[in-house]
Image (cartoon, rainbow, N blue to C red):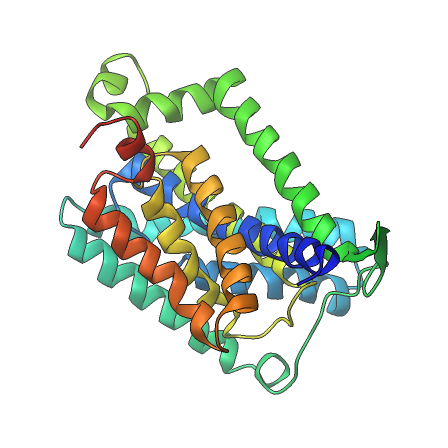
Length: 293
């Protein structure tokens, strides 16, 4: 295997891992704030990609405006779901949360699949750099992959500033650590739960937009969340940086496995890693490195 091939595979793996990491962030953000595991994040990803596509192609908005409005609409949709459906039914029982969000996800996928224009054709966001590449030594790197990596880095920086510099971000962090103490300090826990679901839906939509240039937009594109969930497990379901790092790690390992292992074997790698972490480090890989259970 040449060095050029290895560089191309690594770039592809990091880009894919960034998408995994963003979806994993949405899992962890909701879980830390509310204690619920949302299994509709993949469908929110798919719905976000279709929303941006519809705003751009059907409504005729410029792509940048379509992305901003589409992600904002998905964040509002996540908040609406929390206020109307999830708040009254989600409690301490994790099985209830899992089944409810799984059912909502199936409803979303079925609703999109019932639209002929969405289910009977393959769509792709028309980006100006689609199909372009840049040379790095003897390796040709796809601009789509570099754009995904750059966008993820910018979003991670924006989230860091949000959680460290804004009142809403600090309040959400306090609620995630101890909701009872946060309430005593004047934080509205129900509002923070709404904010967590809104951010989770928005992050999933961003992941869908970043995935759209790499793959086609279709009703089953949300299945990528099944590979993002192991990334959240690698971080112990409690670490936002760990979820993002776990996604990139899984993307790279999967890409290398596809290069070295027989066809189809790479799809098993994320789940083997998840099983290994659950057996060896029940609190997450990061916690295991720190010596905590």
